[in-house]
Image 1 (tube, rainbow, N blue to C red):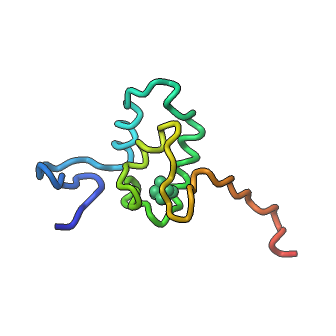
Image 2: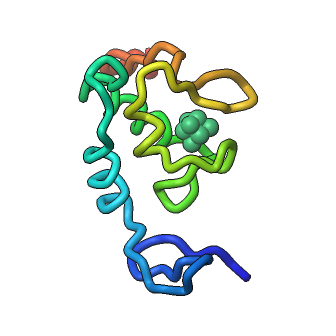
Length: 105
Ligand code: SF4
């Protein structure tokens, strides 16, 4: 049985049609009753999701193929890490854009 994800996907357990779109998963993650100390700041949350968005291990914009987590949940948690075998991609400093024209010198 193939796992289908996204809006209108069928739950592999109950067979009911579920909306597993990134927007719905993000909304559910935002409602996670986490104490403030256990929650990352919004900017850090968005930064982590941007890293996931560029990762080859992200499936259907919601699932990390390395750990099976919904990244929208995992990225909210202070102390959570990225399980990429090459090292924690969330911990790497952001790569800055090259200055305009610097590649043409
Ligand atoms: S390996 Fe890391 S960056 Fe890639 S999807 Fe999983 S948590 Fe995100």
